[in-house]
Structures are given as structure tokens and as C-alpha cells.
Length: 100
Image (cartoon, rainbow, N blue to C red; front, side):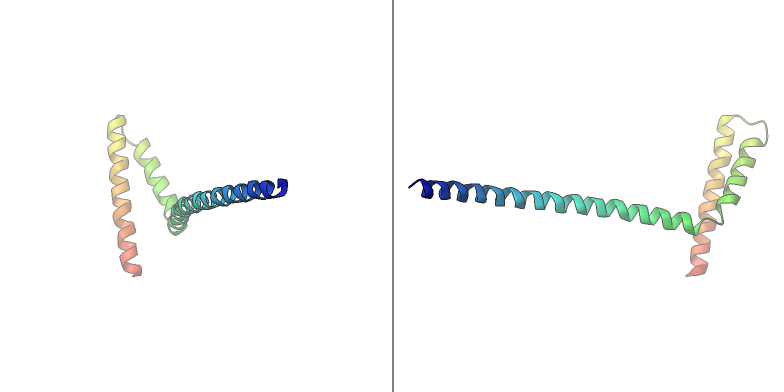
């Protein structure tokens, strides 16, 4: 009799562990999917930096020149820098079109 109650307790414990295990598997699958989407952004950022590594010295030089030149205030320098960024975007898009 004691053995059957012990077996019943073990059966209930097993069922509980199996249900908790499936919950943990689902949670782990969700974590992996969110981790995968984060890794995609890292990969895209790395490939973007790698593709533009030739242009970065030019961009830094232009930004330094824009910030150091003239007697314009902070707002004027920000506007110059923003226009340089827009020009850089146009150049990059033109280069992508030429490569395709």
C-alpha cells in the first residue's frame, strides 16, 4: 500500500516536472528568437561599417573641418554637419546603385 502511494506521488511529481519543462522550453524558444533578431542588427551594423570603412576617414575629416571652420555658433556648426551627413547619404546611395 505504501508503495502505491509513493508511486502515485512520483507520478504526480513527474507530471509536474514535465509541464514545467515544456514551459521552460517555450520560454527558451522565445528568448532565442529575440536573441536572433538582436544578432541580425549586429550583423547588419557590422556589414555597414565594413562597407563604409573607406569613407569614414573622409567623413571624419569633413566633420572636423565643418566644426572648426568659420565663426558660426553651435547651431551653424550643427547645420553644416547635418548637411554633410545628408550629402554622405546621397553619395552612399549613388555608390550602391553603381554597384548593382
